[in-house]
Image: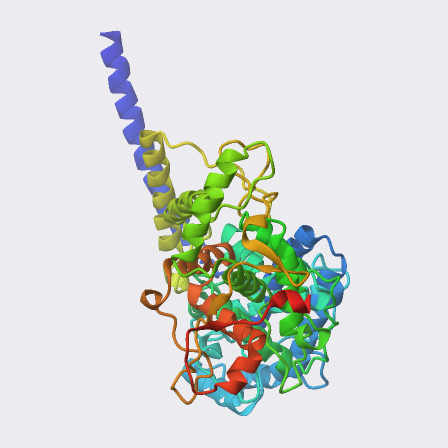
Length: 563
């Protein structure tokens, strides 16, 4: 009975309290002032890219351990870009014109947007704040951000930035427009200037693995930099750019900045083909003795010369070298010289080597192409399967919600919170284990250790089975060679060799292309094109003698005579 009375009292008290609360809420609602939305800083699109470049430079500097990368190289390239595009470090920055136009037409949003677009079409680039470095800022020498409030300014219509709504729709004459792939071009150009050991394929892989900020990196923007509307289309990317796209952007960027000839790439530099061949011979688990033959191919073709390797943005006849692809092509050409790779000779030779190794197990093992093929194929299949699983588990959405306008901001935050809660519940039901800690960045995919009994290591194997001494010269037993292609593409605008079609080439050759394509994370066709270029330089005399004949097999010269 006492419990019922207590329960009744609680209901009566709560109802009375509810009435009192409703009354007080109705009174306070009338007295409450309407909040003005926080518009944050005045910022421009290039300032957003600058913040991304800062984060990428810090990550690269941690990986390579070079203190000059961020403040001396990449920062100076960025300043030169801002000056060339008339956005900063000039007497009349273009943002002043845009700001004046914004004030004059602030009463009409559509007129302001139209006038700004006309100004950009007649000008040279995107607007930007004063090009004065703020040494007191935490961003160091990269600091150009304007931290003034935008409450009294006119922003670009339906955009968080000042120029986001017209940035992507305007074509600027003589100006290279910034984009997310262009940030990687800045990074690669800085690495190439310093002649660092990180190649373009390594850079893209580090960005894919998250060691270098690229995907959803806008979430690291300061809270005062509001991002919505057209800004999302500029900074939000859901895929990595291709190798060719970043390389093309880097060449365009270097030409736009009018950079001088890059530091020379000598034999002591990591980007020299002789040193890169060592790396990829280790990566592909091939014998160390192959390096002597790759050096011979490099010497005979002339691709190891300083003038050939050094990048010169101004010179019209300068070579656009893809250093890692070129090294992979040299290794493939060397294997074709030794094993022919016609799906017949290499397998018959492997049977002979297998029988010899069985009879002489205690001595030095000869290189068995068939055994190597099985080992590499199994390892590569496992790596490709793991890569596909990681891609399927990858969370593409950023932790920071995106919204098209301020009106949908709170709805987006609520939707994001519901998604996170549901994801946590499913993880608990499925019993999923937390992902392991991110591994430190490495330029190698595989680790072939001598002590590892699960996978055979072929680094110390001998090439004695395919060598013979003739006229006091060590040469190969195989006297033949087939060319990958002798035809140029028929399209007038294309200067590449014929399109790579797998059905027209031996499977051993296809396997090598796919192997190095996986290691470099590029298409096999790009490596095939580079193989054709190396063969053209290696057998230049044959090309000049038979320019219209497309024979696929003929006697080759002895490479040993040119060692």
